[in-house]
Image (cartoon, rainbow, N blue to C red; front, side, top):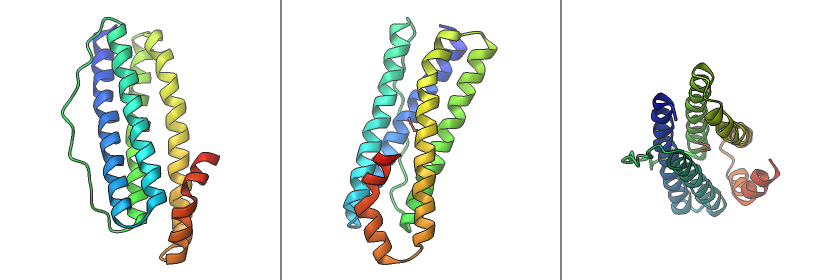
Amino acid sequence: MITEIEKLLNIQIGFEANASMQYLAMACWADLNGFNGIATFFYTQSEEERLHMTKLVKFINERNGEAIIPALEKPKSKFDSLHELFEVFLKQEEFVTEHINKIIFECLNRQDYNVHNFMQWYVAEQLEEEAMARTLLDKLKIIGDDKSGHYLFDRDINAIAAAQ
Ligand code: OFO
């Protein structure tokens, strides 16, 4: 594997790991604030990000590269509102998409079509996750400060996410 691409994939391992921890912290916040549906949603997101990380680790190692497991950043764990919680979700996904695009760009630049092919799975995944984060944030904007709206959002979030 081309060294520069391997470096970028290793950086991506860290981003996926940090996303997993961020969503775990968000699940905890939701749990503590009585939003059980939202907590379940973020526990699931956290697990998914961990799988994205592992997929990269295995891919690098299987191709004679060396996956490097990085230290984790401390995630944000306090949120002022549901709105802020989901804003962080969307920003996190946008950040990851940006780096994935960078990897794709470098793959094409350096003609590494194997990694390019592998990364298409991440491109599709990011499209889905960003769309979901935007939909959820849009719904919260409509709900505003309405407490019963928050109650229904919490009750229905996993169904909304599954329907995406
Ligand atoms: Fe790893 O899928 Fe989003 O961030």
